[in-house]
Image (cartoon, rainbow over all chains, first blue to last red; front, side, top):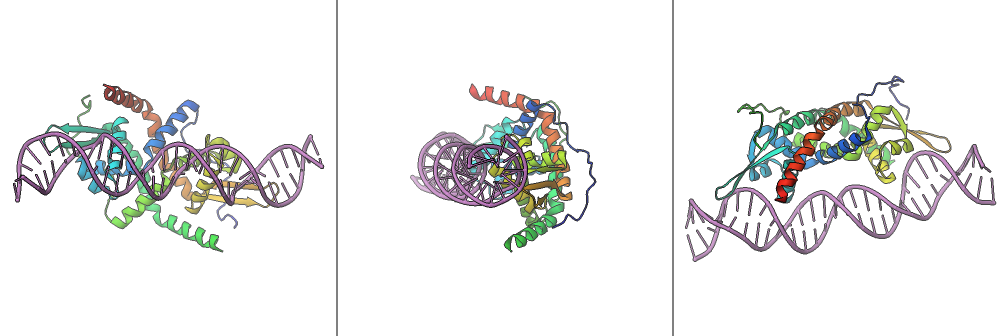
Length: 136
Length: 136
DNA sequence: AAATACAGTCTCCAAAAGGTGCGTATAATT
DNA sequence: AATTATACGCACCTTTTGGAGACTGTATTT
């Protein structure tokens, strides 16, 4: 199929400089850990609710298993995204909240979230077109 | 460590409305596919270079295997993020470029990329602190 | 005549992700 | 006295992901 819109031949890159390869590698690594389904969903839950306990997050993130919740929270804590506060009571009570760093990441991901929300239909349409074409 | 900046007690959620659960599910699904390491890296390569051939992308995305490159490009094509143009020549020549949709996603992810770049050190520090504390 | 380049596909195998269920400690509840 | 609630850790198992390498087809190059 011919391309419908002839894009201008020269285009400016909207990306930050891909200068230092070491920095690139580190950024890639960080992205790899942070651009994760569960991380994003937990991030959203915490961004919405300020502070939450373990089981409450589990309810807000449908489909997550205890294991994944614990694992992801630990990782986020290690990366300095969430703050974990253990109250020495029985039954145990642990509060989670975003750190400043976590909040800024939430803000950054917000644009992606909005993008997904705004372009849902376009994606669905594109998929349908692609699939029907592939089926021929 | 105590938090340095005391955040205001009431906080507005910076997130889009989590209204419709069906929309939420779809958004989550889209996010899950799009927030992928290889997708992000290929997206970056294409955002920087306008149009690229298969082997060229492979060189720009270090560590990617042929299989993953093919697979991810197909997926991105299916989702309407990239445009694949086959030139009927021998040896074969295939050009990839971002669609408008792909470009907007690139722009959205740009903030995450910048965040990662800007906060690399804070993350490393947080990890070091966490690990040293865990080792005790 | 053999090698090379391109853009893959296909098969086999290893590694990682992720789910399920069980165990733990203890105070309050029934 | 047994049950419940909480926040996990641990072991086992399945599913998914992803890498390595061989194979394809043809025109150009050596």
